[in-house]
Image (cartoon, rainbow, N blue to C red; front, top):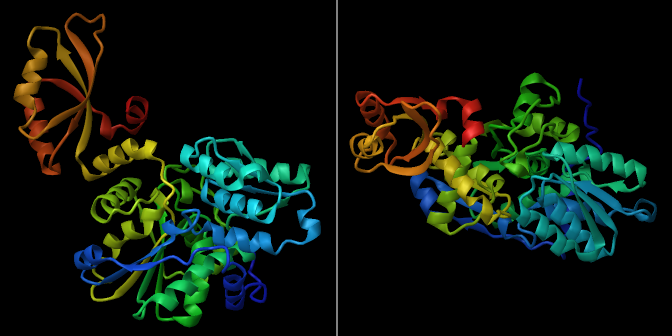
Amino acid sequence: MSQQVDKKAFNVEDIIIASHTIKDVISPTPLQYNHLLSERYGCHIYLKREDMQSVRSFKIRGAYNRIKKLNEDELENGIICASAGNHAQGVAYSCHLLNINGKIFMPSTTPKQKVNQVKFWGKDSVEIVLVGDTFDDAYEKARECSVAENRTFIHPFDDFEVIAGQGTVAVELLNDCPEKIDYLFAAIGGGGLVAGCGTYLKHFSPHTKLIGVEPQGAPGMKESILKGEVTSLQQIDPFVDGAAVKTVGTKTFEICKEIVDDIVVVPEGKVCTTLLSLYNENAIVVEPTGALSVAALDSYAEQIKGKTVVCVVSGGNNDIGRMQEIKERSKLYEGLQHYFIVQFPQRPGALREFLFDVLGPNDDISHFEYTKKNNRETGPALVGIELKDKEDYYPLMERIKAKGFFHREVNKDSTLFQMLV
């Protein structure tokens, strides 16, 4: 069974104290009214722009608040942390500012942009170790190193001082919002942001509904609340790296189960579509986790009509090298990108026949990989087709069947899709 949080160990006063501790280090971020989203959903939507923080994420708040309060004994051998990227930047920034030696473990899959930013903020004060495929892999190694080198571990979310630091986001948005807030949407990874903000909101704005948002590939908090105890996920999709956590915090779980009104789980493809929309329509550059809160609005479209809504845009550390994958995932989710293995008859004009008689007027070949095998009668090709409208899918399938091209839909075979696309 999960442990019970000592109510005396954490309360709203800790968040108020944290806001004074970090006030000279963090940049108070804007609370921006978004006209486009407000019109789309028929309500008043504000974006809390934590992507505009100095390290482009709210994580500096909790990291600095925790590190600033360490004593000499805790600092003697330096500090250590594990992070998917944003907490690492907050720790690195704090180490350089406070002249502390730090060691930072990050997954090998961490986007290069985040690794470079950690190096930039930490300079000579930190050492970076890339290990494993997920945050949880890096976390295990960091814990082992913490014991071996007697370094103080700075947890990315399951620490009351870290939670208090993240809660200062709510201090700012309540001060800045000109209206009573009906709904707050915020991402959940390990749970620190929602635990902190929720604690403050439920004290000073108890009518506000707190909606946590998790990626479909890592719904750790939702699963834990449903089962009544912290539940580790066996597998996760690391794509939404800032929220891809197998095991949420014990402390954050105990807080969240009391204060969170609902948790929305959003498919990764939907996150990508929202990320691209924020960029194309609002010129806002976010990372996948930063788009989670806005991506959840569709799930609450009816409930938020006429209401005042705040979405925490939690981070903007996106690697431009990921944009092709983001566009691909978005198109797949929207039903605009389809892959097929097509057996082309080995005769002149077969490919031309496919192009002219199968493709619709608005369909495009986005990928074509043809390998002639020993079979003299047919040759397989991996064909990617991009549609202008998802409704064009069924006419496309009818034309493929009518022309007699033997084919297999890769999109509908997850194993095959992972191997080929």
